[in-house]
Amino acid sequence: MEDWEEDEFDGPVKKFMYVNRKAPYGTVYALEGLEVVLITAAFDQDVSLVFIDDGVFQIKKDQETSGVNMKNFSPTYRALEGYEVEKVYAEKESLEARGLSEEDLVIPVEILSAAEISELMDTQDMIVSF
Amino acid sequence: MKLGILVNEGPFTHQASDTAYQFTKAALEKGHEIVRVFFYHDGVNNSNKQADPPSDDRNLVTLWSELGQEHGVELVVCVAAAMRRGINDDLLAAGFKISGLGQLVEAGIIGDRLVTFGD
Image 1 (cartoon, one colour):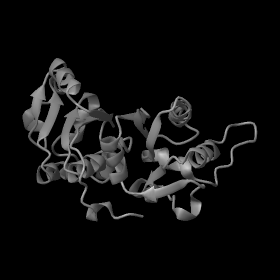
Image 2 (tube, helix red, strand yellow):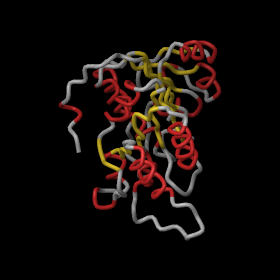
Image 3 (cartoon, rainbow over the protein chains, first blue to last red):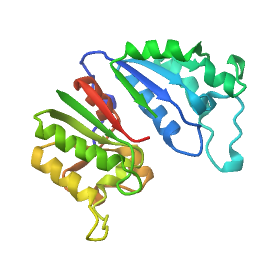
Image 4 (cartoon, helix red, strand yellow):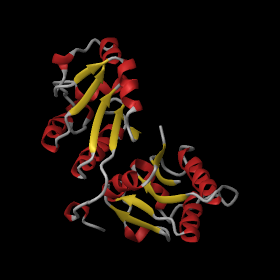
């Protein structure tokens, strides 16, 4: 196994967008997806993070998960700032459809319409959906 | 074109790994370069040499293993996802290796495209 963390990566910077579409529990995609986001940031890449569909529930405040015997990993999203991941977006339509607004979220996000997110996607080198 | 491949599903429940395999094979036949195939989430189960499907079914573990060895394609299994699912070096089919998520990011940086297979 290689200790990638100790390697200085001296390559080009690309624009990576991670699209979170799934609820935080029920499947493992959100939890393991967040790991990828943090590591991409550690590689000094230009990282954007978007929450769409049930993915907006990932960053909902006051998650209480003991009933489903799952670790509440929502506090980890607060670590994004420390990794200098500052381009964090949530889709307006997805929030509205679920009765959520900015103050319901565990981290500050920029709220964009589906059309605006689509434009943002056009500017990326890489889009990975979890 | 230089392609990175991300496989997010296991070998038998979901079609993603089959499609990824066919895509990778076709890309190699067309002369494209595969930077790396990275196995994440349940995709790590594609590396388990103990998989033993009925003889009239395809064995994706063997297919990936052969493809990797024939074409010198790196087949990398995420260490954290593998540990969670009980996959370790003793279980790895030939041609696979376990490494960190940085290998996925690097494939994205080096490659012209990163193609994801999964939901």
